[in-house]
Amino acid sequence: MPEKPAKAWMLYALRCKDNSLYCGITNDLARRIAQHNAGKGARYTRGRGPVVLVKSWPAVSHSAALKGERAFKALAKEDKEKKTRSRSRKDLVSILLKGG
Image (cartoon, rainbow, N blue to C red):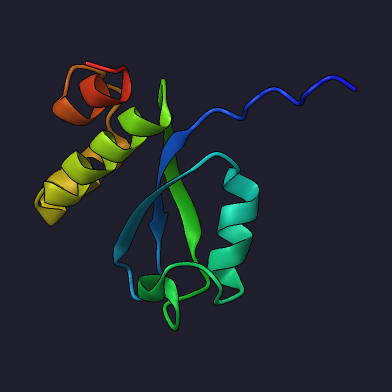
């Protein structure tokens, strides 16, 4: 029986009902959002749901996704909001997600 291909890792940003942003990584976005909305996701999103996907970005690997997440979480709130609206791929988060 052939193995299933590995799912690609991604960084995602969610908007909580209190208007805050939550950032995480996953290789199954639909499942992860369902977990957050069921109160089974991250501690931060419990009690702040329902959450809505704002944006997701592909990563070349699990390691790249972790590095991108760390860089995104280090941004100021205003810069996080800009990143969710930006199409630029030249910022630090995007470079890290590409494996740079």
